[in-house]
Length: 276
Image 1 (spheres, helix red, strand yellow):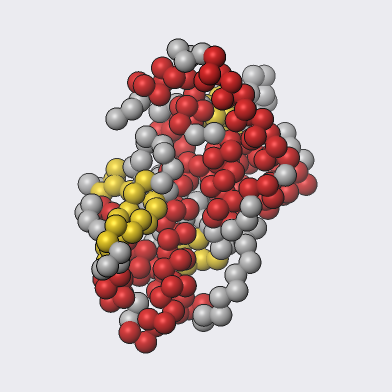
Image 2 (image 1 turned 90 degrees about the vertical axis):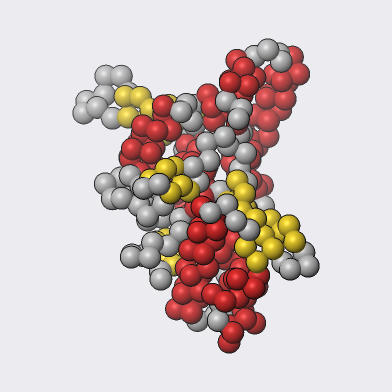
């Protein structure tokens, strides 16, 4: 078990907000970010592109000068929560499509005939496991997720039932391993990366994602970054020397935080709540 000091240090490494020089009034910023995020979700679910004109209709005329700031925050919010990347496909009319940006083959959860990716949350969970020493007590996972507004016993607007998603769905899909510690009394559980996580991502990619949403250089994660680089070198050697490895076979077999409109939702990258 990690000491309270160690737990606090690791949680702060992920959750500490990056510097924000924006001078917009917070209530105005929150309203515009929330409105535009919900429009983006709708467009993603309908598999439709979105134009700047459509976005500007949400960001009312008097706020158009602040559109670049709002657009940047919406883009980061979508990436953090769902692993969605906005890519411009029509420069003349500023048309964008929303795509899975994390390379994971699991890209959605389905609830009430709607779907939204949960890759952002999955990468964050993998990041917590890595930073906690590659094996983390379940309570540490929930301690961190509680800090960003995700609770085991509370249904989430995007993720549905977080406990089921994390301890059942992702375990069954081999992204996570979840097991009871032998001889523990009272019994307690730990999380590790599953084989599918190792096949589809890496420690370096996870750190790069966390660094990107925090607006820092991955090397700022110091010791973890060095470990990620060593892991990358080892993975490269394995690929060169053993193309028929279990990891390669696993890949072949599997080839093919948004504001709640009714309550507050935490935006991970800024450490602030964005509410409609």
